[in-house]
Picture 1 (tube, one colour):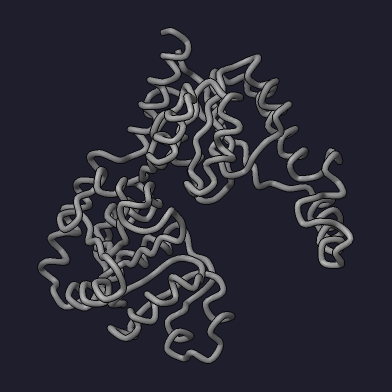
Picture 2: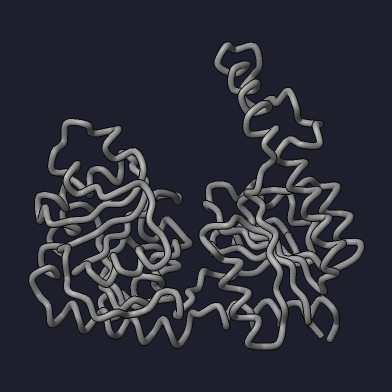
Amino acid sequence: MLKRVLVAYSSRPPIIEYLKTAFARTGVEVRGCHADVNHWFDRFVIHHINKTAHNLRILPRKRDLFSEHPLAHLNYRSSRLLEAVNDFSPDLVLIVRGIKFTEEVLKEIRKRVPLFGWWIEKEERMEEAFREVRLYDHYFFMSSSCVEEGVKRGLKGISLLQHSVDTAAFRHEEREKKYDWSFVGAWSSRRMAFIERALKVSKNAAIWGPKWIKKNPLNMALRNAVKGRYIEGTDLVRLYNESRVVINITNWGFGEGEKRSGMNMRVLEVPACGALLLTDGSRDLKTVVTPGKHVVVYEGLDDFGEKLSAFIKDEDERKRIAAAGRAHVAGHYTYDHVAALITERYNAVKGL
C-alpha cells in the first residue's frame, strides 16, 4: 500500500504543499524536496563565471564550464534528491517536471522505488520530456497534445494529468470589488496587445508581474495599473476576490484555440475563488470547464474587448457564471482527485 510519497518540485507555486494536504486525507505522508534550492557557490561563482564567458563569447551559450562540478545546480539538486530518498525511504517518488535531474540519479532511484514524472511545462518542450520517459515507471502530461504525440511514437506508460486546485487555499471571500479587472503574469508582446485593449475599456485595474514598466516606461495608464512584480498566497486570493473580472492571457502553446492544448493553473484557481475568469481557449480547457457556463472564453482581440466591457457592467451575469464555476471546480478538480489518480497508477505499477 502507498504510505509515503516524495515529491520533487520548486518551492512555488506550492504544488508540494497542495499534494501533501490532499494525500494526508488518505493517510499517505508526503515529503517535499525543493528542486530550486541552490548552493551559494553556484549562485555567486559558477553562474557569474559562465555568464561572463557567454557575454564575452568565450563560451557558446549552450555550454557550461562547470557541468561536472558537484555544486553546479543540476548536480547539487540531484544529489539532494537522492539524499532525500535515502532519508525518507518513500514508496513512490514523484518528480514534477520543470526542473530536471541527472539521468544517473533517476536510474539509481528507480532501482529502489517506483518513479513517476509529471510534465507541467509548455507543450512546445515535449521533445525534452519524450527523451526521459524511459527513465520513469509512469509519466503524466498536463497537455493532451503531449499524450497524443507520445502515443503516436509508441511511448508506453504515459497519460494525462491536468492541473487541479486547492480549494482551501483558493477560496471565495466576501469583499468589495476594487478593480474592474486584474491580470497576473509577466510582460510579453502578445499580452501587451490585450492589456492595452483592456486599459481602453477601463483603467481601474491591477496588474502584477515583471517587466511591464521596464518595457513601457512612458505609458502612464499602465504604470498606474501595475501594482508589483509578484503576488501569491492570501494576497493573490484577495486580488481575485476584489476583481470584477480576472483576465487570463496564455503565453505558450502551438497557437490559439483548438491549435493549443493544456491550460494554466489560473483556469481553476480563479473560479475556485468565486471570481469571473475571462480567458483564451484551448481544446483541453473545454473538457474541464464549459465556456459561457463556468468561465468566459474570448477569441481574438476584438472579442476580448467586447466581453470584458460587457461583464464589467453586467453584475448579475458575472455573478451567475462565477458561482457556477466555483461549484464545478470544487466538485471535480481538487488535488484530492490528483492524489487518487496517482495512487491508482501506483497500484497498477505495483500490481496491487
